[in-house]
Image 1: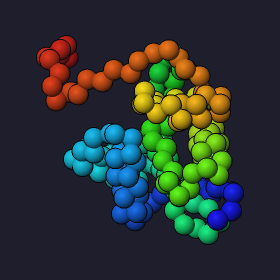
Image 2 (image 1 turned 60 degrees about the vertical axis):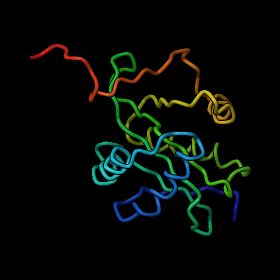
Image 3 (image 1 turned 90 degrees about the vertical axis):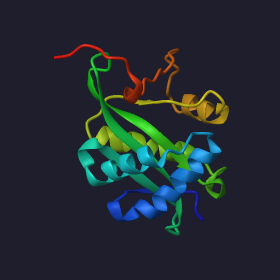
Length: 160
C-alpha cells in the first residue's frame, strides 16, 4: 500500500462496506451503536447530497481504509452554512502512515470546494490521539462542551 490516501464520494451501493466500518469505529471509540438511528442517518446522506457527503478512503490498491462523514449545518456565529466533520475513521491496518492528516486535508478540500468557510468537529474526551491530530492540523479547541437533548424525551416547549 502506498503512502497516498485517495477519496471518493460514497454512493448508496457502498452502504454494506461502509456500515461495517461504522460499526468498527463505534465499538473502538465506545459509541453506542443504535441501528435505528445510525442506519437511516447514513442512508439519508448517501441518498441526498444536499445533506453532506461520505468520503470513502483507500490506498493506491483501492482497498478501503476508512471513511469520513460530513454534514451541512447552519450557525449565525459561523457566518451561515458550515460543515460538521461528523466521523473520521481509519481501520487499524491503515494507521501510522500519515493518512489521518491526509484524510483531514481531503475533508478540507471537499468542504472548501462546496463553498464552506468553516469545518467543525467533535472528539470524545478519551480520544487524546485524535484530538492531538486535529490540533496539529490547525483545528482549535473552542473551550466549549457539546450538550445533547434527544427530542424524544424533551419537555413541552414553545408552540407555534
